[in-house]
Amino acid sequence: MTTGTSGAIAVAMNNNILFSLPGETYFTGSSKTANVTGSNNLFFGAGAGPTFLTGNVNADPLFLDPLRFNFRLAATSPAIAAGIRTGILFDFDGLPRPQLGYTIGAFEFQK
Image (cartoon, rainbow, N blue to C red; front, side, top):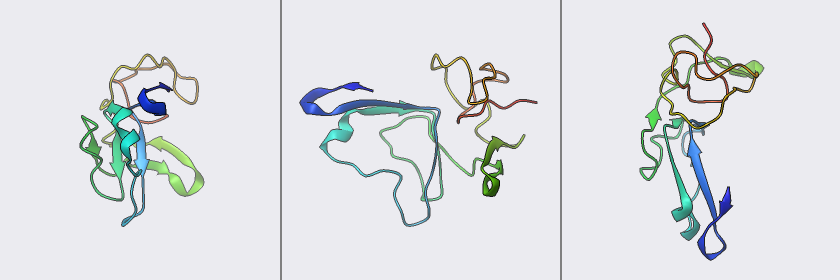
């Protein structure tokens, strides 16, 4: 994040998975959301993602076992190869990115 105009923070959201319960929101806006940009994020649970972010995927990410906090992706996840190059060279486990294309989320899909 960097300082934006009028004291707002500039945020670039790329290749994230955002989950929210139905009836809730992913995040709320204000005049400061003008400094939020990004693309290729996956939104699930509370409807489609915001239209000011481009390349959104609106689908179940198909985590392997979220009840046990295993947020790695199943082989059929729509997040696999749906991301963009961001300069992040390794995933949360320290494995190199990309494998089969840039994966959305913290874990690069590994065969």
